[in-house]
Image (cartoon, rainbow, N blue to C red; front, side):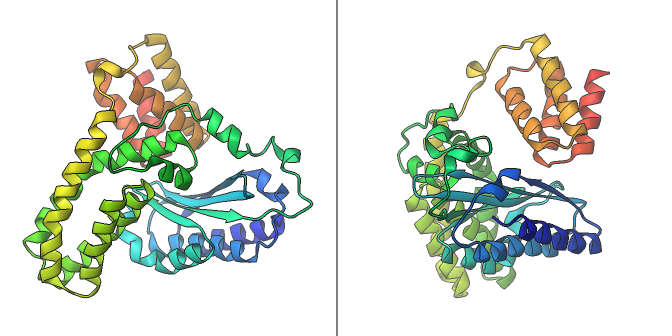
Length: 345
């Protein structure tokens, strides 16, 4: 990939962000410049579009653009996305990404949304004279990616998690996304129940359209094809301004969400499955969080957030830990640093 083109896009995006007084940070794997692909013209357009869209849609303090990839049997998968640090959700801005969705689909890729993150996965063909073995220091081949993914995928009715793996690339990320979906279902149901009472209102129907579109994408990504198809049906009623149709399908969607939540509950960790509290290990985690927040290193913060969530925390520390985890999820480096330092005393 052309390093100069990457730098040009980063410079252009930085100027756009400066105009909106947004701090734009980059987490771009240096190894991308060594990956030789057949044609990266369309790729530059995709990266430009995701940066331009995100900067134009959001009014926030900070955005983080991420780009990386991995070798596959077919070639190379390119990952690019954006995170927002403020307490806002990408699900509220789905319509603004409609052009990007079409571009990504035309390129044979996928685009996925999470609460504070959007990312696209694009399959690329390597140049014939390119040898991936020359660059294992930058990226792992597909076989090694699978090997380092320590979480084993369960067998769940209604979910094809191998499909989810093809979208997300790592077992760990599949399980993280599945659990994130599980914990969002109650809020999802609450919204649909509220909108059901006012679905004749065009504004309510528009809100339903945005949310059910997100449900369609998320459930498709997790291999929940029945739920995704049902969400698509709900989306079509909203697109056609068919309020009676939406009123008929919403209770069915709610029932399916309850059904899917029950299925996922079989693999949701409970307190008894958490690691025992280890005081020295706990404070080492907090120290690493301080260092990660100070260096604005998302990988360090995410890794240590996972360690905190997996540990059985004593009651007197529980509230403080929940605040730190929440701040990490919101990518609020200053708040993470403040809270972690406060815990250290």
